[in-house]
Length: 327
Image 1 (cartoon, helix red, strand yellow):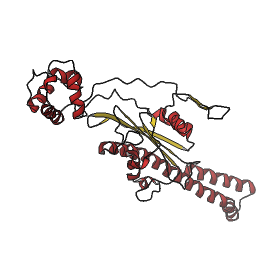
Image 2 (cartoon, rainbow, N blue to C red; image 1 turned 180 degrees about the vertical axis):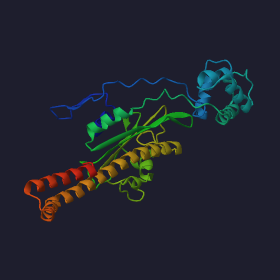
Image 3 (cartoon, rainbow, N blue to C red; image 1 turned 90 degrees about the horizontal axis):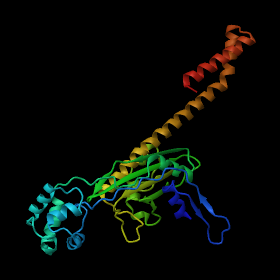
Image 4 (cartoon, helix red, strand yellow; image 1 turned 45 degrees about the horizontal axis):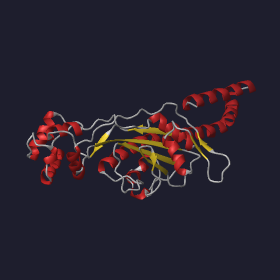
């Protein structure tokens, strides 16, 4: 049930009906977004992300007759100029057949591919959830007083494009004395286990939440009425194991997650301070209003006012108080 609940949270465009074993009535996770996500465009692998074993397999299965043509056809962002630079760096002739490249030459080619400067891969192959859809999905499953979401610009790690999205829910009725709930997603799929070894958890715990007026024990999750939602969209998510329950802690990924958390955290901090100022202003206004009749009586005695004039003084003082404090 929790897996389906989080799946609905990351896919607010879908409606899911679930009947538990032995249950009579299905539970319906209602669709809250009408727009279906755009289908991402398929791209060839980027030279920076390919591993040596994969490169050797590609050399053996390609239909290209020359290595230079193989580089342009099998990889993205490889032009004639880039292919020539890679072959020159690897010490391979342009006319050599890919199937005649031996192991040592493949190692030189792989090293050259990672040393030559190549344009970053395109990002239209990614399928982010989107700010509005994240807020709709989060507000459907998590009841809170404030919501905010961030979609970071695409970034690249080891030649693989990826995009980080962060959403936060803050305020009652979320419990204020418990650690924040963290929802982790990779390509819209929930990650339920191995949270301690996940890059998302490490980014959350390494973020200084106290700057945003949220309590946090040293090296731990923030404590307060807070829910954290982090999604990673990528053509190749680096999981820590075959179970695909945690994202590997690449520096580029942790950095992007932390930047998204910090931007969303600043918005939550603004909300907390604004609400605190409003509560303080209301407390002072209530305190002053409590003594307005006493002040009016004192003015009546000093200025010898009648009852109607005293009521007018109370009304004027009340209006002045509301205008000065913008209540």
